[in-house]
Image (spheres, rainbow, N blue to C red):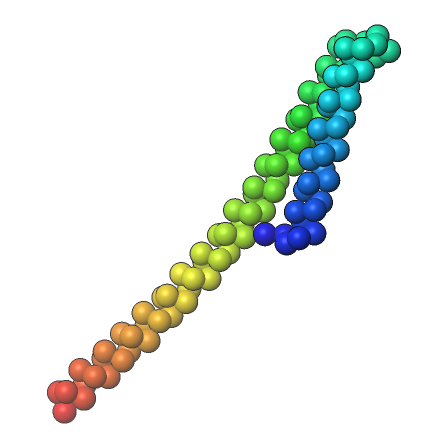
Amino acid sequence: IGGKNFVKKDRIINIVFLGIVVGLFIVEITTDIIPLYLSLEVAVLLVSIKIVWLIQNITKMDHFLFWILNSIEFRINSLDKKISEFGDIISRERNQ
């Protein structure tokens, strides 16, 4: 929906989140610099932020799709009214 810039931004954010989580995992396994629970909590926080971000993007997409479908429905209703008017005009001309 957002075009090339949005896809590029999305890819960068995904790489950053994945890099941080994998980095925390590697640091936790190889060293004891960060306490176990702290790194686990940071990883859970990052995953939670990512989920919230994905939900926000899905909401934007759903709103965009709703707007498109609403526009199509409005246009179909407009065409239906015109067809009904043409039908009334044709039936009046046949009766005359």
